[in-house]
Length: 230
Length: 138
Image 1 (cartoon, rainbow over the protein chains, first blue to last red):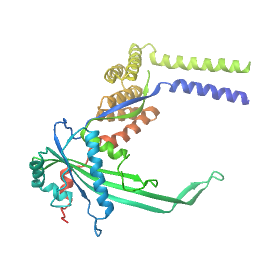
Image 2 (image 1 turned 60 degrees about the vertical axis):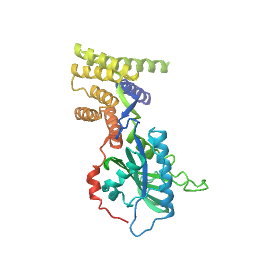
Image 3 (image 1 turned 30 degrees about the horizontal axis):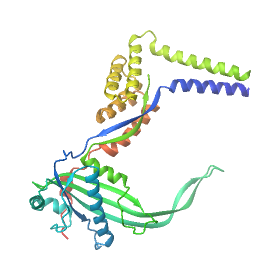
Image 4 (image 1 turned 90 degrees about the horizontal axis):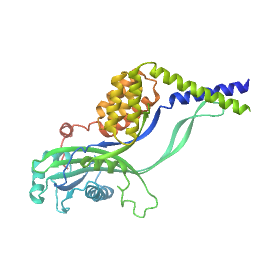
């Protein structure tokens, strides 16, 4: 009796395998057009990198460090990965406002950048960095393998690192017109082994890097799909 | 001895299943036979990366035997590979409306939705958002 059951199951599996053998996994590269294509001959000015104002809080040292680090990171990505021609950094750039929304309405500010630096496009950003250093208990559901009942248990949750909220804008310097706007959020876990915790705070952020590059140059994303062979 | 008998039975089942499937597909219909050949050829060239030709083959197969979820699945994948993302979305939906239980189609559609949401869905309208954020000078 038992043997027959096994035989039946084996045959059933064989039939099922034959029927489902048609679909096979293939890897494909999906090509994505840049959201703001440039031909590489344009002069691009990077800045200003503003700190997103928070109500009731003054600018902290971490905000200044984050803005400086982001400036370095953005320049590196745009030069190395997007291969754009960047105009050297201007330390004397003083925006009339620290609010990006106000700046976007001020066409003269962008036109002045063009006049002084011969810029075709300006890549500016407003950055909000939160230092997360939280640890605590949370309740989660748990199904016991012993009796199958659902229980609730307390688990320790630790969240330490930097949470980024970056608004990146591309402005046509000649007219001051906003051409592109990209909101990017990401999270970088804290590296306990680093001597200076704020150094390289934007490195290895795949989402951020991928989104930044994708604004200017074509990308290919590798995906898997099931394809029928017949 | 027992194992030998079992192997014979499994082999017979496989042959029977293959015969049933092939028979059902071709049952005297030249269109089905040609569509199957197109699907095979499309799959072959797709694996080599010739997705334009693959799409053409799958579309031809679809013209010969319309409303086949398997063919629509392949068309949708080829459309994705050719950058025709909006068309792929519609083709996946068409295929799923014909056979909601098709696991390959469902899996592909879920993966495509994730990709579409991450990379293709349009960003917020810049001007509108800019107007909404009331300028506050600090």
